[in-house]
Image 1 (cartoon, rainbow, N blue to C red):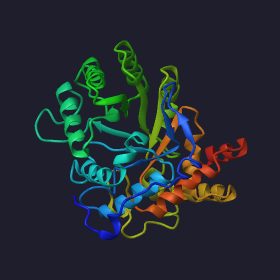
Image 2 (cartoon, one colour):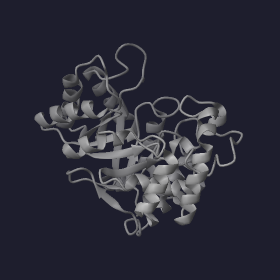
Image 3 (tube, rainbow, N blue to C red):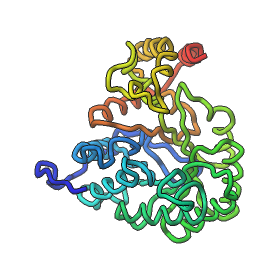
Length: 337
């Protein structure tokens, strides 16, 4: 998609202050430091969205020290359009900053018709990454993930494809996403045997979705890998949006598969109680929710989406207060239980 607005096409110069306030965390035992808050391009960056707004969000993110941009082959809609728009903006604004960026993409979910456009075969993963690199105008990505386990393809084939992708110079590191603890441990062992730098597991994690605490975080620590958390705000439930019910036009009002009216209504009392704790900490609920995830030593970064630069700036203020007292943590656990 072309950028036509003359007011937006002037040369972008990144803020000279961009590295002064961001917190950076080591990813497992690798040499990679990730910003504590990273930008996910799952929503708001497809062809149906305003590319000027997307460009403004990306500029704001980098000016705030967010060096990690997270994509996947099927982000959009339509599929592939987030990568293509990102590639357009990368070329106009960030070409000279490429070595300051840590760019991710993934493959594992439905992407194109037929038996080779989904899951975890060698055929799919290598073909998908080739397409992603072309859409973004890149020679390589910094990390390439297998997006979800494939129950039918041998894990050795999937991990072998990731290893060959690194050897081919198409990715510097590899990761996995949505793997349970046992699956992650097996994947890590295979990749270690193949001398492939496995550094990250991307997992859904929020106050309302704590499955990673049931063995996965400990497994990653044992395998010298880090965790990056997505959906930290539980699709908007851990914000001020639903404090008084379901606003018209919100995600929950559209009754989407990952967020619906019943889910929100069943959590309203918890949302309100958590907001009270956040206010006593001098934070918004969304800021406390992000800080709460970052308290885990295995979590290198939290992935947030942003529909505007102002929303991004608001959420990144979570870094102003990352410490919790034992009393606060006990209160939060009591609410969540």
